[in-house]
Each structure stands twice: as structure tokens, then as C-alpha cells.
Image (tube, rainbow, N blue to C red; front, side, top):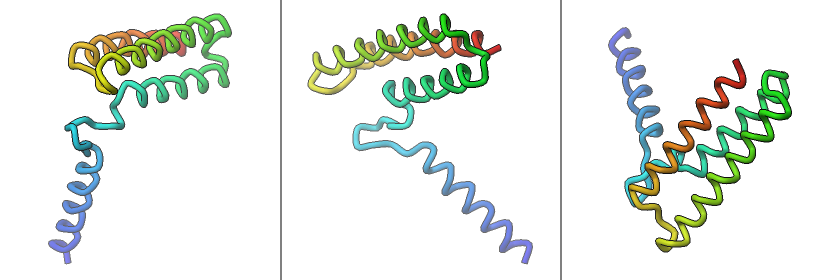
Length: 108
């Protein structure tokens, strides 16, 4: 009985880990794309505004930065037939890292 439970637990862990690291046909994880990351950051900002940890001024600045990153992402996608180069992706990720840190600082 213990072996069966252990085997089921191991199978469950492996199955859920596979979903986390799922990739599309191009080897990218869609859940970690710049677009999805901006959406998650937007949700974090909304939570901060709702609970009062992010002021209206901070919200305005974070929204402005998000629009800038999104416009840059769209321009980069237009340049390369709907694909981001590694350099473009790294630049966007760096800007998103800075914005994410700013969200954290504003909420705390």
C-alpha cells in the first residue's frame, strides 16, 4: 500500500512538473512570454491599488511603464514577422524585471 501511494505521489509530481515546463513548437514557454508577464504584473498592480499599498501616482507611473514595454514588444514583433530575437527578448525581460522590482517596492 505504501509503495502504491509513493508511486502515485511521484507520478503526480512528474505530471505537474511537465505542465510547468511545457513548451510550444518553437521551444518557448508561453506562460513566460513577455505578454503574459505584463498581464501578471498588471494583476499585481490592480491588487496593490485595491488594498491601498499602491498610490494613484505609483499606479500611473507603473501603467505608463507597462504601456511602453508593450509598445516596444509590438514593434519588435512587427520587425521580425511575429517573432522576438534573443536580444529583443532579453531587453524586454530586463525592463520587465525592473518594473517587477518597482511593483514590489511600491507594494511594501
